[in-house]
Image 1 (cartoon, rainbow, N blue to C red):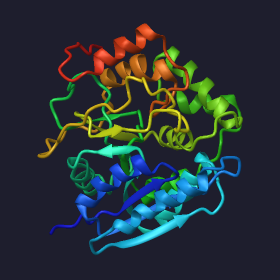
Image 2 (cartoon, one colour; image 1 turned 90 degrees about the horizontal axis):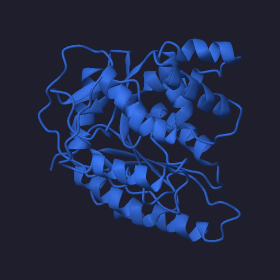
Image 3 (spheres, helix red, strand yellow; image 1 turned 180 degrees about the vertical axis):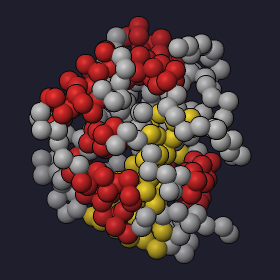
Length: 320
């Protein structure tokens, strides 16, 4: 049987149910290399040791020739530090990775999509990551994917040389330096003001996550993300046990996936301004996150509106 040659970094913690479902999809690819990053139990959660152990035991089900490498924390490092140090460890092992967290359920075509585009853009520093996420209400591009300023991280892939920028990044010294980076990214004042506020809070230590630093890294380097024209990864992790995605009624929970098989490539490498603007107005502005987390729960009426908008088959216009 064929084996996926691109290494997979699988990030797990204490949720065996969702981890098992994602592992089953990984197992169908029989990856030659599997790197597993795990945080340790929290001292103030008595049930964590058992749940962490049960989650790690899922790896005993590997029944194909596999180079399994693990980076298990014995004590809890927290989301921000564990993901950052874990992915740095993984990129020290291999130059290219497909990255899945324990609640990110991929369609099988996600793996080939990432593998082909990792090869295609390997030597192009402008393209810094490949995502499996699409939150638009309908296919927008005439091609299989488009380029975006938004680095969605619910199932993604990247290269060591791109992640090296994350390791080397230094926080902005002041608001003027932060503004100089964001002004290269945002042409609309409302986007600029919102993300200045979010990143100022992050660099002041008010937000514990890793992806805001990755987002800032990409924006500082004026990098782009590949986004598929159809959604390839569904987030199963919304609910009380999640670190950030706690609203189980979120319209972004368990968005259906579709297949992308034969790739049709865009002619030019440039951000899709129309799709990016829609994403800010309907996703980012709603929740204030790059992936997008539900930290500010929207009103009941707006949540129902967005759920209808993201329902398969719903027709909506995406205009400039």
